[in-house]
Length: 103
Image (cartoon, rainbow, N blue to C red; front, top):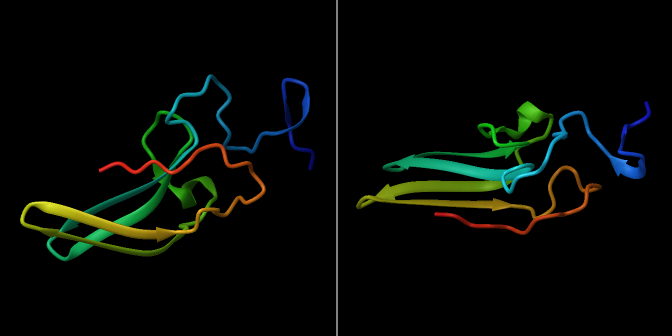
């Protein structure tokens, strides 16, 4: 199988899920989303290829790269903790962004 190239560049590989339009800061972003109520929590690894709603990594053919996760809510404050390797499933793709933590 021959992978497509980008506008004649021979070394640029487009995967089947790669967006083919102008890029935005939210394009191709790996996101961890969590929620907690009391001691019950849900924390998952998501990916968004464009400005659409993030989907689970597994939807795009990836995998959940979280190695540990914990969440709880106390006194109106939600705390989400997670552990994730800095290099995920697609180690052959260049790292283009740093980690950005939002609360």
